[in-house]
Amino acid sequence: MFLEIVIGLLLVASIIFSFAIIGAKNKWKRLLAFSLVSAKIMMIIVLYALFTGTTFFLDMAIIYALLSYVGMIVLANYMLEWREK
Image (cartoon, rainbow, N blue to C red; front, top):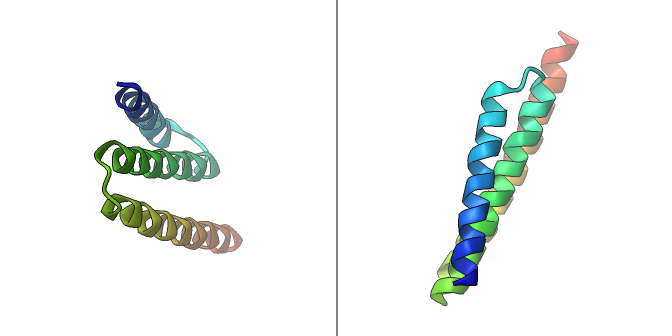
């Protein structure tokens, strides 16, 4: 019951931050909101793994976290290079 409530709250927070991605005027705020959404999704995957008792979802969460980290670095570097031109 508790995990279901926490997963629901994280899902609501992810939806709110998704609207922040769309509505942000500054590109750095969009990047920050994207990072928050990806962190919330990773937490949802981990909590779902605890809820179901399978370790496969923990592996998925680790892979998702690594891909999200690399994606954030690539986007930040692209934004810095784009600003210099």
